[in-house]
Structures are given as C-alpha cells and as structure tokens.
Length: 366
Image 1 (cartoon, rainbow, N blue to C red):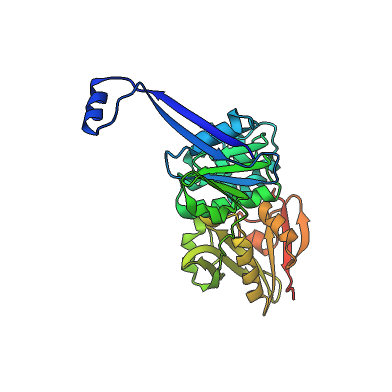
Image 2 (cartoon, helix red, strand yellow):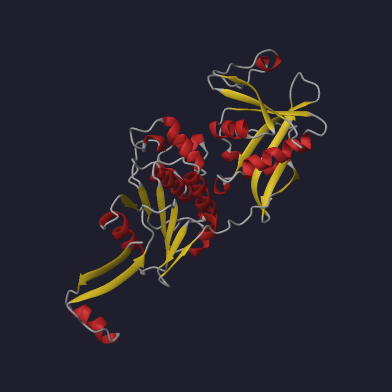
C-alpha cells in the first residue's frame, strides 16, 4: 500500500503589511512556509473501484490526491476540478470527439441528468446541480484509468450532493464509464454513505477505512393528488408541459418533499384501457430509480380496474422498462407518425412524428 509524503513550501515575501500582520498576531516571520502532508492509500493494482479522500479545508486533500494520482509513483490518472465547457456549443458537443452520442447521453442519464432539452443547451445556462452532473458525466468518460475529482459536491446543495454521489457510484459499478477507478476529493462527510466508497481516507485523523457503507434507504410515499400539483413539475417534462384536463394524477414524496409526478388518461378508442400520460422526476432526485418506482406503483393502482400501458421515446426509460419484469414490450416504432382519425381532425400538433417510440404493457408480477 503506497505511502504518500508531500512537503509544500511557499516563499514569504517581506513587506510592511506582512510585518504588520506578523506583529499583530504574533506570527513568526520566516523566509518560507512549510507544510507536510502524509497519507497511506490503496494502490491502483488493488481491487477497488471507488475511493474518497475527505477532510476539512486546508488539510491537504488536493495535494495528496495530486501527488498520488498524477505526479507520484501512481501517476496514471488526472485530478479534475471542473471542465472548460464551450460557450457556443450544446452540452452534448462538449465531450471528446471520439465519443458517440449514445455513450454521452447514456452517461448523462446514468449520473441523473435525464433532460434532453437541457442536453442541447450550453453548459453555462444550466443550474449548479445540472452543471455538477455534466461534470460528473464528462469525468466518467475521460480516457484515463483513474480520475480524482477535486472539490466533489462542493458547489451544490446537499440534496443534489447525496443523490449525485449515489448516481455516480451506480454508474461506476455498472461499468458505464471509461475510467476504471474514481476518487472523490471532498470536505463533505455527509456524502460518504451515499457514495459507498470501497475505501476512504480522513485527512483530519490520518486514518484509512475500507468497506462499502450502507446507503440510506429511499422510502417513497405515493398517493393520488390534484391536477394543480402539476405546476411543480411541468417545466421538467422532456416533451410537453401540458396536462390533459381529465388526467388522474399521482405524486411521490420523500421526507415530505415532492420528488415525482405521474398521471394516466383513458386510451382513446379502447375500453378499460389507460395509458401513462406524464412521468416526471425533479432533477435533484434523478438517477436512483425514483421514476421506475413511481411508474410501477401508479400502474399497480390503475391495473386493478384497467389495463395500463406506456409509450415513450426517452432512451433511459426505454432501457429501464426493457429490464423491468413488470412491463412487457408491445412494439417498437423506429420512426413515429402523426396521429390519424379523430385525433388528426383536432388539428393539434401531437404524435411521435420522426421519433422512435416503444410501447410497454404493465403485467402484475407475483
């Protein structure tokens, strides 16, 4: 297990103000300052995927990470503290040119950034939480065997930090990243149970701990709600902010906070058939299966009296439903068509023109 020993030196430049501060606070004046940081970290040849270096500000986290993973005997990776995103390009165009669109959007989905309308915006106009998830996706797709992510979760609120940590852990362990090992460098201890690292080193105590922590459970409460609740979610739907006036609506809450919305409507021309109309999970809670749990429970409730199905073009949702034993794929349409018959006569611009769609039917699993 490699031992990292780093001495950081900086010159002290003499001036009137420097002498004034030294006199006021009884600071001894020297020609240079010197700090020593030590750590014993697991080697890259050991069996681990996810690590963390934690500690208060100024404790040497970044110094140790830089020496361990970019400058020392283990120099096989990169220390990342954000990326230089182009201002005149969409987020999906900010990744390396050798990546294809499926890799990029798949990784964005994996880290909990599942909004196609936001993917085509410049990074600079996104929220801090969305920027953080974009940086995570780009880090995971960096062509380096090990990535150390400096200031991990430092610029986002703690809810985004927790779900983002769990999402990146899930993405890494499912093999959806180009880097094989990832180290979070952070001053926030609260993310450790959500990140569930294989090891973590505490700069404050100088101790190394091993073994995945138990991620806190996410207990959702799902119930019927009024249509007015839709206003909290409508801006986040990837296709439309409209809600059918006769939709049955359901809301998912976690710790009494709204996190997801689902609605169903009668399927026109079919008796005792309903279809999922809207499904939205707030951005801060994406990436951990909240949408799947909400969809399954809504379908279970509706399936008591009616057959329930869903048609979607969202790639992440299609993949999730294809793996879900509660849903059976009905058909896949490679290039959708506009509605015909009565719906066409309404004159509304609806349908799946030009989009690939997949339909699934809910089936209860014992």
